Length: 494
Image (cartoon, rainbow, N blue to C red):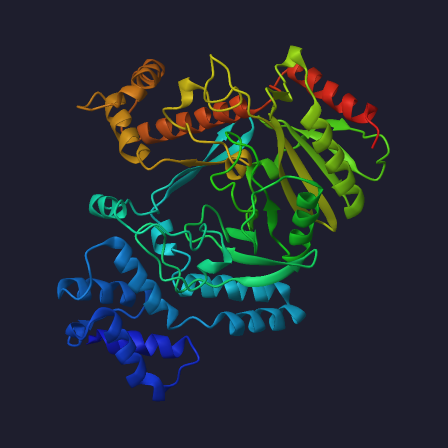
């Protein structure tokens, strides 16, 4: 049944906020202030708040009261959804009050709020292509990331003339909460952060707007300081998984090439998702001298992973710190492992924490960011023969077995499928050798099977990508070198 668009949106605001029916005129005028009163007569049959918001933006653009620039529409959309978002103080009071009796409900309510007010872009995320495929290392997860909107060329040109600003300093700063946004910084009017304490310092808990997995969360320091892996990192990750039950927590590495995209702000990622690495078994049990209470082993994974399990947090942190400190100084020329060169460190760790069946679990992924003339992008980085699928850094999420692949692959892989079927196609030059190889292996492929063949081939390449990123390769020689490092840890005084 058709209804006035502005009235329908205001009704949703009242239903999902502290506003009351008496506030309807006030809210109507707030909406007109944002989208223009030229939309006053527009009708709708929608009843979902996010859909109504999108229609208001579309109507405002049609009557000329809203700019065609995507960043302007994003800013106005965030302001509209802010009308149904509690203030930071109220939201935090509600969260911690609920937390007293049910941490799980407090987290669930905050996640629901973050989706309901369109901070978590569920509509955009649904566009991603995502699937699982079997490999030597179990089922890997593949995602072609289509959720983030492409930048408008006009906006890119306008950004060159925008006034420079360092407020907020980055997209992880606390100052993003409620920020209007600008041409080169996303709108955050509807953004909210849960505050919590670690080591007596203020930290924030929020969700990722363009999530890569279920309840993709970010835990960030209130001050804009660079990332650094240390004993504090392990303590914090274990505190996070204890404070936020059901969530894992992990950190990107703190060096270029093997690190994440934002190394300038101390933060961790987490969420409610079981990654392929988590269910990988132990291929070699380990014993660390002086730590009898800790179960340890080398994980059956393409990257070099040490898994530690114990109910003793302090001992876990102590051993993880010892492994980190040993790895930072460890070199083995026979294994291609070099701790530093020309004063530049090459070694760090990507750590992941969980709490399972009453015990804490830490996965320590050894990372090395050396380069060479043969591999200028990184010796332990996707090699050039697989960069047609993945050439970006292998960060925390990929390390755990979830590939985040570029949007270009959506159309490029369709061309490869057409090529395999013998149809007219325009295979990208970077894919041609791979497409030829697939055609040789699958000369009689049918249209019902071709998509599956290409998807499996992408997953196989992702497994190779992870192998490239692994310091110690699979096989007996790699295992021997890995165990040599473990012996070095055991021989080192704590």
